[in-house]
Image (tube, rainbow, N blue to C red; front, top):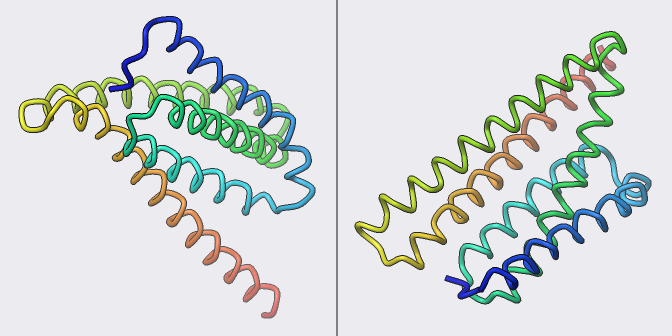
Length: 168
């Protein structure tokens, strides 16, 4: 798909790593400008859009810049989510809750990678190789965008019910 040799692929992954470093430095500034809810929703939505564009291109330079952006927003999401956990979970439970969260997220990542590979293998029987390799990104994009919309609706409903309780 991208026609990269091992060295160029390493550069591509390094670009994503730089995105995560920049994201880790920018998140403090972003937290001063936006609410936790806005950061979570926008991070998930941006990841969805970015992975959708990755699924539509075969340009390695474009994929590199998109991986930079995805890694940036993954870090923004993770730092924001970790802050929520630290504020809402009692100190004596924080280690256990954090380890369960990491276990589940790493497990889901492994299952997602396996399912993505299976999707490529199965779709190659119907579609060409390039589209088959792009398909997991397009599906991931859809999942992220739907997750952002569902989260936004749930948070809106939660805010409205809190407002009703305050006014009651």
